[in-house]
Length: 159
Image (cartoon, rainbow, N blue to C red; front, side):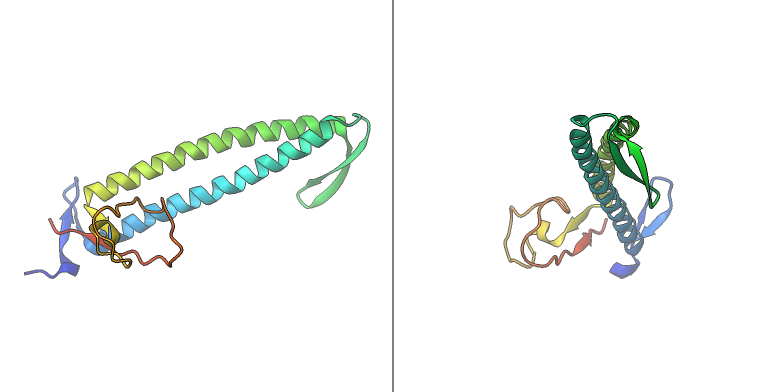
């Protein structure tokens, strides 16, 4: 009889996956989701910075000098030259934020489908978590963080 580490699952294409391969696939999806979330945060910060600068420059005279950084080079321009570019960039960032939010939602749904497909559960979802709480401790991964260090155990249930 095969041990737990060598048990395999059959995919829709008939290919056999070991528990390690299932776990690695799940971790890959979670890393992709984390990267999307980090990129989204970064773009939101840029968007907010653009909003602040635009708000400041809109009240100024169009012929007033201002400086803008282009690829590490500080260039002298006028407000009327810089403002349209900033507004255009802000609008592009807004569209990018919407796209990243959609991708993040799709990735979350993909992770949930993967969890259901391979019957993946965290130990805390089964009532055996480090806090010893039973029953209703069910949570999605990354949804809620506690003050204690993360000690999740991912369980791939046998077929």
